[in-house]
Amino acid sequence: MSDWTREALTDKVFEILRDELLEAAPDFTPQSDLIEAGLDSLAVTQLMLAVEEATGVWVDESLLTPETFASTETLAACVHELVQQG
Amino acid sequence: MSSSSKAELASPERLPLTGADGFLRAFDDEIRRRCGASHVSQLVLRLGQGFDTDAFRELIGRVSRAQPILHAPIRRPGGLGAPIYDLRAASRTPLPVVEVHEPGPRDPERVAALCAARMNQPFDGRRGQLLRFDVLPYDDGTSELVMSWLHMLFDGAGSEAFVEWLEAVHQERRLPSDAPADLPPEPTGAPLGARERGQRATRWQRHLASLTDPPIHSLAGPVRSVRQRLRYTVDTLDRGESERITKIAAERAGFLTPMLHYLAASIRAHDEVFRMRGTDPGGYLVPLPVNRRPKGGDPSPFRTHVSLLWFRVEPELARDGKALIEALKKQRRESIRDGLVEDGHYAMDYARFAPKRLYAHMARRDLAGELCSFFFAFTGEFVAGTDTLCGAPIRAGFHAAPVPPSPGSSTALSHHRGRLSLTHVYQEGALAPEEQEVLRETLLRALAEPD
Image (cartoon, rainbow over all chains, first blue to last red; front, top):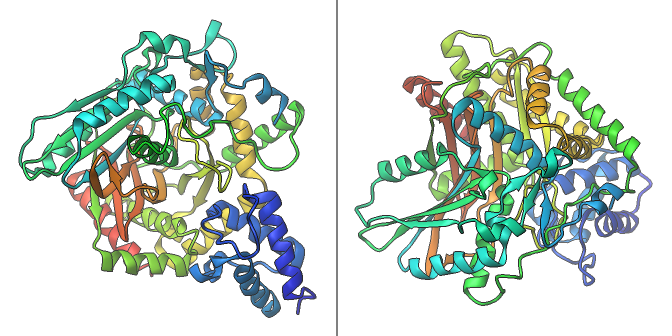
């Protein structure tokens, strides 16, 4: 069981996306659609690697569904559930 | 941005080739010398009724005058430094050709022959021959547009961004001078000094060399001097079959990373031909282009902005669909974690400065006479940013990924409005007709029935 709360993981994922992986527009928020924001195959794997580094759990990309990418919040919620399962 | 890149920023007179451009330029040089052709990429748009050929011709003229890179000679000034697009000299070169052919009945053989002719025709980059268009009008008012270009002018994503931007100019939403910004993207993280960049380039070179032991064999290899005679087949699947395959790809490989399912199917298709021949491929070594543009920005159309991830799997894995895809996922994850996308960028960035023939010599030495097992590309949703071009709806479209006569085989996949297209480009004579059919059938089967 990971120590990460869902809120903390959402903040972490948002920070990585905004600061490292995406050319985020000024209006990019945790509710912004990630596909529209430019998340692609390379960026999603880089993001999962960063999540692994933070939590110690690798989340396979095949576990992420289209609905997952509706926003940072939905993505972080899915990742949080998978991280909790270890 | 690194200091070397700062010194190379575009001027009104010259634009340096990117590292990936330099890589493709070395390919092009090899193909020119050995095979009498060029490394030409192609995009085909199947258009509905209403395509305004006069407006398109006028549009290409306006855009080409505003964007001299489209017909700029590629040179290495004084024989030193990185090669450049000589933008000033573009004022003395012809604009890209738009050839409108005679109308006729719809005939798949006619368009296939035209595409093959363009793909095998030399494009002289030193004279600014970089891009041309062929329009095939049909008696029913529909048409096909074939865009052919010397591959270093656009990568797959860039060629689509170009088409989308053309339509935006046609609709007067953008000006011909208003192309998306064209800066070479730097790897994320802190800028590196020359020494560290060199170390990372060397690491990439060593990684590549390590993948060729034991040596691999392509269906048409090893590299030799034969006339380039490429042709291709394209299969556009119906919506139901496309949806089924897309779903399998998402479940197996990931919604945003379906290309690993498509690559696995391509490996299995090539393996079936090797088994039919009763010869040993040695292993499967395949490069996967990775789009290095900043994510979410206005995509720059011009020049190529890719790095390469290399995969190697042993032949036994090609016979176990589940294990194959897991092996590809693991290699991709480890390569990205180890920074090989960035290392590849640095290696290609340095290699621009090497003479083209030294580049080719190094590639042959490191790859033991082969370039790879086959080429592969997945370009995602095809021209997602527009449904029309110059008055006609875009009904379908696909890329043909070029391949040198050896390895002599490339597969490319893309989606368009829910339909999956598979293009197989091959060197005539490298595969017997029955091998070509086995490859095609196995590819389709492996996509739909991965186990």
